[in-house]
Image (cartoon, rainbow, N blue to C red; front, side, top):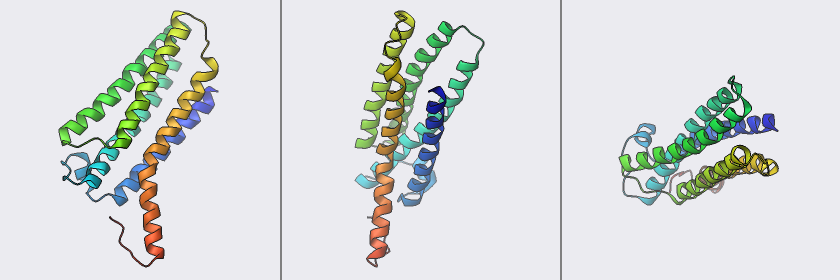
Length: 188
């Protein structure tokens, strides 16, 4: 099961990188402005900036988290110590991800897109799930959540990818429908 979750993790990272590339193609602003510039007061531009910040931070945090997870599991520690480090670390790590995205939005004075807000709800749910798993495995040593934890983590990651992919694929659909109707304009 662990190897399946690892493969899903790497697959999701690849999907998020592809989504970033699609966002780069369809955004109204330059790549540099997506990183540092304050977006204009247009709801589409604000949305694109907010989605970009969320997806980019998600890729970076998931990639770094993947390596940290491997290091924790490979560390020469007892099983109980690994569990304590793993679950608590990833609760804090998920919180740091949310703080980083919030601070980036504040720095750019960008409004949160609804998709970003939904992503935050899922991140908060992941923190609660990790805390429940910590209590289950470390505090009570019961392992009741064994059958649920792995699937829920994988499903939340997949759901987040679908959520992030909505807008880029919407833009791709617009591109193909406008090309087939003879209109080559990509942006709204």
